[in-house]
Image (cartoon, rainbow, N blue to C red):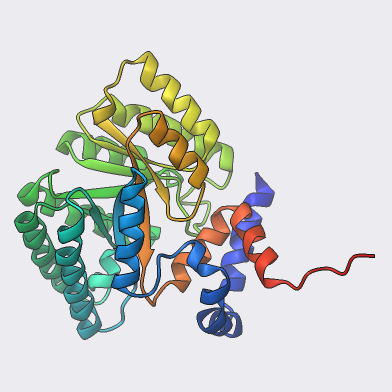
Length: 313
């Protein structure tokens, strides 16, 4: 709907205001952000991982950060992610790691980014772990998929997967290519502000594309991570899965930390695999802003906790 698109664009625009960003980074964490972010340190994040695992939920852990501007920061990010992987191995054998390529230097030095990815994937292979490459805005979609394909040829679907976004017009063709590779694919609707020249502007079109793409993936050799909190979409996909007699070990549902926790536990109770995308770190503001922009319910939650209570007459 048009109003939802306008709201997303407005929220992302307002979130870029310097004074608001400064206030949120210094005050917002203690008020509302911990609902969506599992702390700023690895120690805090691992506590959250243990609790999620105790609740029967699987985890993908993400050290927040993106669009680094110098090579040293990219190398430090790689080192921190590698340390995170080694700590995570000690407490959870089936937890995944999510990364953004711009955090590892994709924009400033693609060769360095590739070098960093090889280092992390060698660690993943040693530890028996899996890395999922997150998809960012459309300016780096082609580069992301190109590097993924190269790395997939070496490390295979056991150690590396990628994300696609249903709101991009190009995604059906990308999914066809990924199916031919037998890649592990996580599909999301998309949370960045994209122009109508490259992405569906209307939610109904994004939803229909999402459903069709997931159905296509489920009927291929690709392991499918269905990442959505949309209850209607989930119900329709569960119906399709039952009609097509698709084994439950061919897919999993994925949701975000702190969102739709009742639905997470309901699906676990019904016997589905549920993985929780669990972000942490000090660079949480861009991630948090996108969560507000993509779901009005998240924005109302924040406003309820930040605005003073209205006087009752």
